[in-house]
Amino acid sequence: MKILAGFVLAFAIGVVCRLTDVPLPAPPVLIGAALVVAMSTGYVLVDRLVARRAASHRDLCGGPTGEQA
Image (cartoon, rainbow, N blue to C red):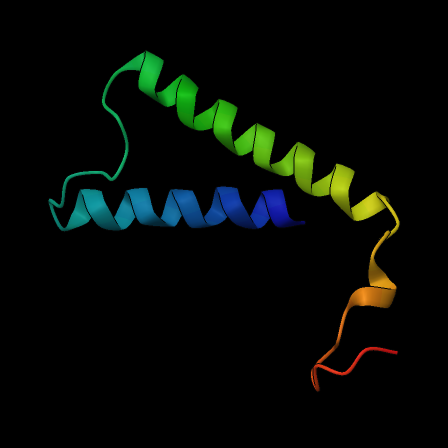
């Protein structure tokens, strides 16, 4: 769902930039576009990897009050 929302948002930004003649906030060459795709893919993959791991230092977290358990 996040990826679909990202594509919709990117498309909307492109349309608004085109209609208002604002330069696109993206690199104009293929290698720059590939870099953006690679960075986005890496971000999504690491986000999924980290979300599956158990928190190993949860007992050290103070929470909203700052007090440890």
